[in-house]
Length: 386
Image 1 (cartoon, one colour):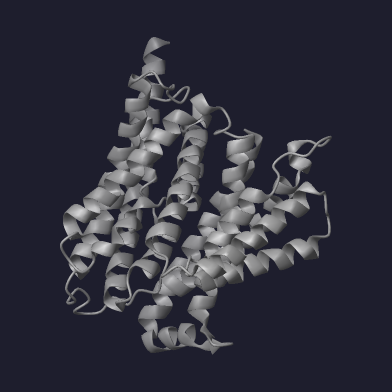
Image 2 (image 1 turned 90 degrees about the vertical axis):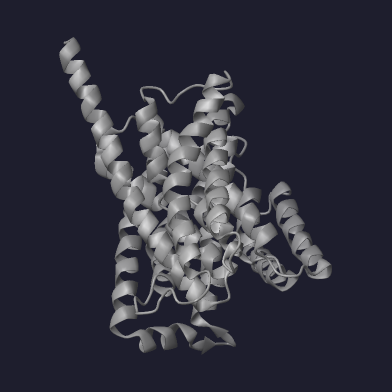
């Protein structure tokens, strides 16, 4: 549980910073909408500040995702394939059902391309909710949520790479792959000169961007290449753990708050939903997050357990699993990221963002309430037995 507790602490604290930045963005955008829009449209070296944040800074966040995926699969909760089956099935249900609900609501409208938005879980906010409940949530549910979130991240990465990338240039993609192969070979050869790795990472990012695949995917790929173990050293001394330790504060307290400032500034104005497909986009995202996650995650877990493929999280009951599923309906960071990729129409972007915010707020409150009530019932049952 050591890596889980460390990850949990950073993400829970980062959730507070992320919330503060989101509130600041909403206040700024509604108090001075022109100033907000002008600031993030400001060009630096031919790119808007918004694009620099979304395509550049967010690469560090996705690098951290790649590192966490690698660690969990190598030495963490997903290393035991049998133990990984239940969170895998839960995550699968929690991705497919939200996307299906969105398409059911918005599939026949101009907003249909937003089906990937409600598939994502914001692990920082979700873990912050569990942290607020403290001892009322069994440790196994922390591990379960982290496993679901890691698999969810893998799904989001695949969706971004396959569905939300532009026309692919084979030559530039081959160059990106060559840079990543060189990165891997240097690791295998035991080269320890960090600037060389940084240069190859930047090259892989640039080539990926020019290939038409979203540039942040390069960050994920690099994270997956960094070793989680090293001969003669403990896992905490391996390059992966050291890189996570270095990057996590920057991601939680700088990258993600800046991303929230740039993307959560929704202007609540009259006629907000006048564009065709806007209502469907907002409702589809909100219902997808709330209903899709709260049903899909426990349903996927139940199927895996009933089929004998895995076990329930120890010390937890199905009501608590359902509460975690509802908490997983908080879809802030990656959902907003996919929103920017899914829609060119600013009205559809804003409508989807409203759905993300509304669905996430309700999911947080409802999930915390379910988990708290389930804990109280267990305590009451224990008192009666005593």
